[in-house]
Each structure stands twice: as structure tokens, then as C-alpha cells.
Image (cartoon, rainbow, N blue to C red; front, side, top):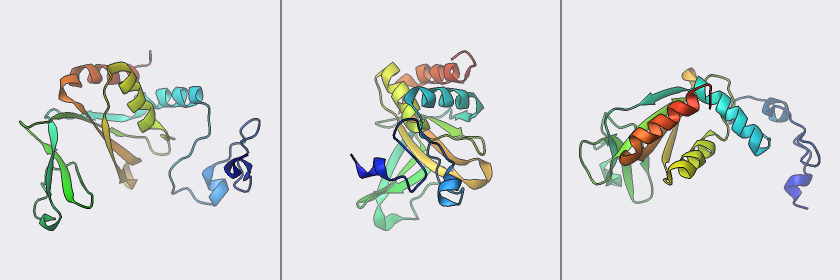
Length: 175
């Protein structure tokens, strides 16, 4: 048996029924990412209940990625950038883009303070992939004063209307 399943010292038993303890009980503090041990159907139900309580923003203008060299930081960062990330070769920023090779519809989600949003990205990305046959990209940030983690989601501009309608459906009490 995998040692991860036998290590009960963290207060979690994965044999038989799950014994759930708060992360605070396990490590003595709250300022960590939530970890939920639940069956997939429980995760689905929890996140469907959470979805209507998120703050969803849809950006009107299309966005795209603009790259620049490592040595051009910070002078090339746009004040309109939603995100700026880098790898070992270049910086990439997500900015409004009136025209370009690849444009995306951007949505953002902010979560209510204290709500367990663990698994949200995987859950919603899988849902959208299964329904529309396309992937999405997600860029996460942290705002401790406004609910903690927030997400920017990008989808192909060609599916913007359909994905917007599906997000509205998921946020309705009937979903």
C-alpha cells in the first residue's frame, strides 16, 4: 500500500470512511489553500452550490497575449495588463487586443471569503471541455482583502456567447 495512504499522523484516514478534519486542526493555521477530501459527486454538488455565490465579471473587449524579452521588464508592461507571467525565455502579458492572431473572451471569478473553492478550476474547466470541446486557460491571483484567490479565465472568442450562457446557467439555482 502507498505510504501516503498509511500516514495517519496528519489526522486523515483514507481507509474506510473519510475522517475529515480542518486544515487548521492538522497544521495549526488557516492561511493555506483549502484541501477537501470528498467523493467526486460531493465536489460537484459543493461547487455547484458555490457557483452562484461567486462574483463573476465578463470583460467586453477581447484579450490576447503579448510577449517581450526578459531584459525589457518592467518598461514593456502595459497598465492594462490583467496578468504578467514569465518563463526562462520571455515575459507574456494578457492585454486588451482589438485585433491579432488569437483573441480570447475573459471572465473572472472572485470567491466569497471563507468558502471552500478547492477543485473549482478543474471542475469548471472539465465541464466546459466536455460541453464545448475546447480548453480554457486560467490565471490565478491573490487578493487577501477580497476573498483570497481569484481567477481570470480565457476561452476562444468564437465560443464567447455559448460559454457566457453556460456560466449563467451554472449560476442559476436550476443547474
